[in-house]
Length: 126
Image 1 (cartoon, rainbow, N blue to C red):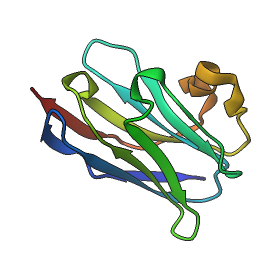
Image 2: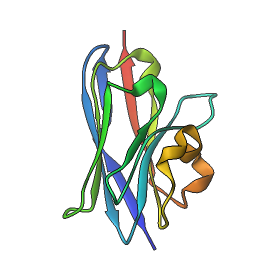
Image 3: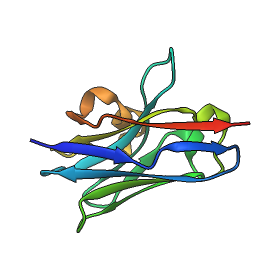
């Protein structure tokens, strides 16, 4: 059984930065960050595998960086140059099997991930 606990959300002005953390217990292979804005579908933001490979949603490339500390079993999302359209509830997700991150947007499909955190709110004001 895998448990995921997110932290680090908050309110920031456009152009600012936040770092999200996700503490994981149990074995995971692929981990990712998703977000869901009111009245919108949940969308994948970034993911990483145990081999270090990463993938990103096009709109966050160059602004967000996903990383994982294997010693602490903690996933991070460094978010820079935040925009109001980044406002959403952010969720940490994990899969206990490899997801092929070379397959782009497919690898950020929520249905592939079998464990989820409770979410942390990110609000970006203009």
